[in-house]
Length: 250
Image (tube, rainbow, N blue to C red; front, top):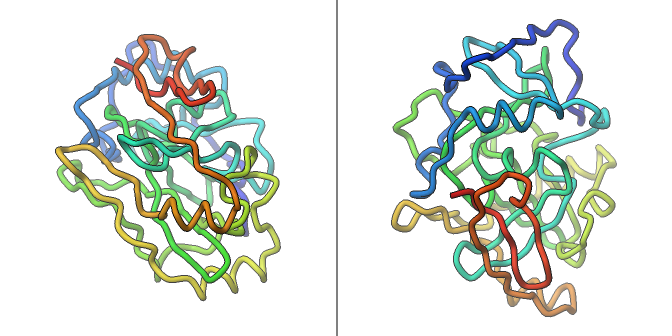
């Protein structure tokens, strides 16, 4: 199955006094020195999905998404000097869910997001195939002290991986160039090799795995370097204008 199925049985929780999930803890808290209150996520994301009790944690499940929806598919990549490749989402919850926490998948509730309190340009693992670039969301971990930035390739389900032709990597809407044919996706994923390691420098995630020169050659486009700034309001987070992106909350 390639999609994030909607749960049949969900316990939707009311959170009058939000607290951080205790059982599932996102490793995003170790990403940078910029923090955010967990309560901000509950307040701002409630109109875009359900907060669900799952395995002792409170997680976010988006609503009104297609059956074959996956994280990191509706939006595009931009390159920043500070952090490397940064995901710009076109989804109303994307300013939070692709930068402050991690995504997991369960058969009973589909794709769910575990909040984190630290920012990163994207929480993904990268792979390369001869003519394709491939990425997958990094799953949550139960040990908050771990700062793992890799997905175990051999045990990651095929539907976790997002595959696009390298020549389309700079597309303004990745969703229209994603490989959705299941046999083709499986073939590409199984032929792929690790593209390199996302690194952590001075407690900050640096996402420069995909070489800019390769992208410019394959796409026949110049990669624009985007400057990242901070904002105090979620409404401004994730806004991109020419060579400037407002992405981080103070």
